[in-house]
Amino acid sequence: MPEAYIYDHVRTPRGRGKADGSLHEVTALALATVPLQALKERNNLGVDVVDDVILGVVDPVGEAGSDIARFAALKSGLGEAVPGVQISRFCASGLDAVNFAAAQVMAGQHELVIGGGAESMSRVGIGASGGAWPMDPSMAVPAYFMPQGVSADLIATKYGFSRDDVDAYAVQSQQRAAKAWDEGRFNKSVVPVKDVNGLTILAKDEHMRPTTTMQSLGQLQASFAAVGMMGGFDAVAIQSHPEIEKIN
Image (cartoon, rainbow, N blue to C red; front, side, top):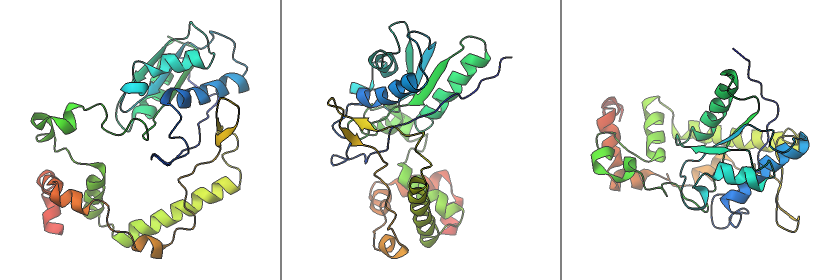
């Protein structure tokens, strides 16, 4: 069986997924095109040499739908003969796209494949596809659907992580992210997003808050307390994990 190797990797900076985020006016297609162009240019890829482009897209609808991988391949100049496919496995979509790319190489089906993910949550919000899991009671109820924030609270409760524990980890994570950027650890793996005039829109992850402290986090209200209680999701969580009720 052939071996699969990661030859290069690159991404755009992460913008805030809100209307005031730096990338909110950049279409999902334009955003997906940036890393493909970078891969083509920095590796001197010829036209039509890439065998396939696989992109994970959580909500493949609107401007992020209709096979954005194929359109991004065309827009980036990889060539008209380069195909593309988009897949969705929710939060594991991009990871699985890379796995599928590696599997194609290891199966001997292709020699050069690009795998990755594309999301613009300020333009195509979570749940935009309106799938059955959260929307159809016949699916949501037996599958114990609940928002990710409520499920995170469930996990923290089940394994004994306190508010201070997770706040401390969040502070450390912010500090580590800022330190990594300051040390230039992302210089080769992040490419800026530019407008049609070549002016930089965003060159660095903007979600970082390195000045975050335990005190500043402690002033924030729990984000999913009301959702869990008023939306009935706390009851769903306890029903799916009855041992939690004993912990509480």
